Image (cartoon, rainbow, N blue to C red; front, side, top):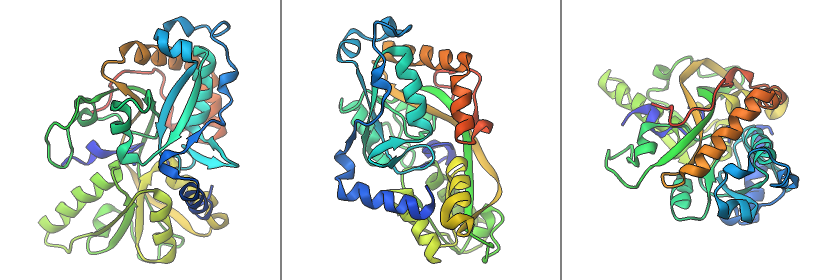
Length: 318
C-alpha cells in the first residue's frame, strides 16, 4: 500500500483538542452519521444573479442545492460550532455557492464512507479534506490493490501534508517517523495518515525494530483524546489540523508539532465520474474565486495561506 493513497486530507484538518472532542460528542448526541447541517448561508445567492449558474446541471440548478458529504469533526477544515458547519471548507463552499447560485448543504458522515455515499446518490459532492489520489480516482482499494468502485473525479483546491502531533514538551522525544517504531500511535482511520503509519510500520519491521501499535478511530478528536491522556505518543494528521490543535488546545499547552510536513498533496472536491458537468461547474467557480481574491481571503482568515493553489486542476493528485 502506498502512503499517499489513503490521505484524508491534506495529505486524513477534522477548536482546540478539547473543543474538538466536545464537538465529536455533540455530533454523536445528534446522530452524527445522519446529521444534515443546513446552517450554511450561501443559499442566499440566487441563480438569477449568480454569474456561473448556467454551468450547473439542470436538476441541481432547479433544486438550488448541492448536497455535500463531509466528516464535520476536523477543525479548522470543517467542524460544528453553535449547530452550524464552519471552517475552511464551508467558507470555500459559501464562496462557490455565490458563483453558482446554489446552497452547498453539508451532510455529516464517517470519512471512510463518504465515497460510498457519493456513489449511492446520498450526496452530490464531497468536501472533507480529502486528498486527490490516483487510487481514489480509479476506485482502487489501497489495502488490497483491488478495484472496488468506479472511482471519483476531483477538483483540487488546497495543498497540505501530514504532520506529527505530540504532547507539549515532546516527552517521548519524537522527531521523525522512525521514532514511532515500538510506540503507540493514535489516528483517524481511512486517512492518508493511516496509510503513512502503516508504511512506516513496514519500514520499522524491515529495519529490525519493533512494530508500531496503531490505534484507529472514526474521528480525529478521539485520537487527540488518546494523545492528550498519554495513551499514545503521537497523532498523525494534516498540517492545518495539527497546527490548529497545537495553537488552541488547552490554550496551546496540550500539543506541539514536530518535524517537517510529510508527502504534501492536493485536497480535492470529489464528484462522481458521471457528473462531469457538475465537476466542470465547480472548477469554474473555484477558478473564479481564486481570480477574485475571495479564496485568498478565506485562507488568510484561517491562517493556512501556505496551502493555496493558483489554479483548480482536475485530478491533479498522484
